[in-house]
Image (cartoon, rainbow, N blue to C red):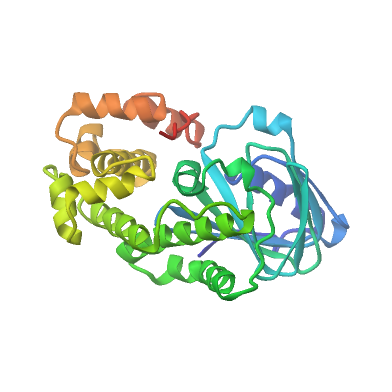
Amino acid sequence: MDRLFSTVGLPARERFNYWHDVACKTIIEHDSRPDPPQAFYAAIDHGVVGNLRLLLFENAPMTVSRTARHIARARTDDLFVCRQTAGALQLEQSGRQLILQAGDITLLDPMLPYQAKFLSGSKLLVLKVSRCELEARVGNGRDLVALSIKPIGAEAKVISEVLGMLPTYAELASSGVQEITGNYAIDLIAISLALSFDTSSPRLSPAKALVSSLVRAAVEARLTQPDLDTDQIAAAIGVTARYANTVLGQQGTSISRLIQERRLERCRAALEDLFQEKRNVSDIAYAWGFSDMTHFGRAFKKRFGISPREYRRVYKDLGVRPPRTLQVCE
């Protein structure tokens, strides 16, 4: 995990305003109030494990609210999985109220209003999970927000402990291990949410969840191969293409769609990278396995709303990602 922000070294009167500005610009827009202002401190660490973005918050007591006003300006396809690491946090969303204590887990939807009160000694791990990936496993995420998942019982304890270890994987694991671990973590989150809601089992059995994770890792490791196809991925993990696509179909995707989606994400990241600003768009596309620039341009615009060249220009001029077309879960 890398340090994104800390109040250490800042004058006391500037700490909260500086923190609030950083949090709104880099994480999510919200209103907040410290309690008391003169004693405020905060630190934010961030990292990535596979498809998960990790944020670790440590801060003095304060109240946070995300309102309809913030949501009206937002475009996001993420859900927030919260695991309290230390201290306590009071949350309210969709008429549900709960108190998170160390080891507890819950789900927040940033496209719904919520309120949070951080108590003394609070330390919170937030996992930003693709809405489509999680809802493919558990159904509508809005039915599952603000449920208290406590580490009571063998299954819940294991899930809480695994999520708590994710920051370590962000620091030490190879990209291949991170990809597998990230997908495995999403499967565990789906299991915990389904059990807490007392609904039917998650859509993937453990065996199918493993196949899904292996497929995603195999795709990630081979994205640069222009001739990569469904049969190669299936052969790499030792299952038939039909079975692999059946498993992914339960998550609303397929091997071929997954290959294109991950290639587009890699190209998007390269277009944002200032160290690659002198590379031609075509060089980036070919490097990540695209062989037809017309196809690449159309696919990129469909996914992100603007052409690759426009995306690079807007990102460079504004320093932030252009408004993104919301991903439609199929």
